[in-house]
Length: 140
Image (cartoon, rainbow, N blue to C red; front, side):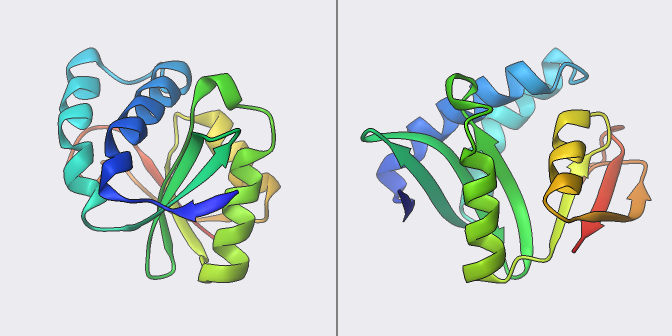
């Protein structure tokens, strides 16, 4: 079930984020992992959040701002079960998402977005925080 996220869900979102990042972002420096973990609650304030609940537990979430998918994370225990595809399909169909920025080094995510119809439009050397993690700007 996809539902809107409430502030009371934030701790679970942080747990999902941590599980996802630890298992998919092997390129991330440890100090940057801690930096992003500290700042993720601030990022929540700038997006509309939707979560996927399975058996009463939030298994994944996405954050949307306008037509941009700003974040999509699935807890590692639930990866590969179609939750990301359900969330992105909901985002495209219901929220009119048409753009996403993704870490170039996160090849699983790049392949996932290509699989659901996105293509690379441009590339930047630095991420939004000015760190040396190249970003692919993708669109439908």
